[in-house]
Length: 65
Picture 1 (spheres, helix red, strand yellow):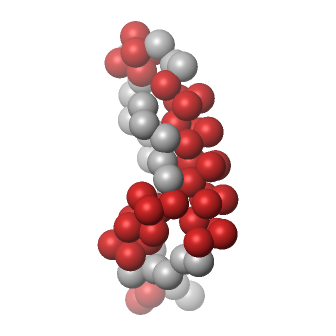
Picture 2 (cartoon, rainbow, N blue to C red; picture 1 turned 180 degrees about the vertical axis):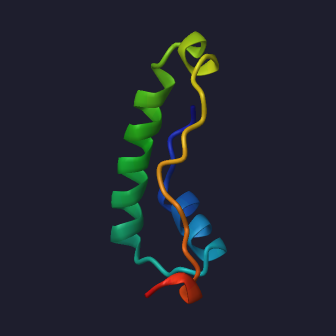
């Protein structure tokens, strides 16, 4: 997998309506690249047998107390 770079992170942030300075984008790119590298080491056979799991729910503002 290709490592993410500053430009990739800034582009994704802009698409999400966020602004990042270059130093923060570098930090995020480094961390995400590390995570992706670790995920690449998981055998595909293990991934194919995994079932999706919901780990969080999104509440609307009107649902909050």
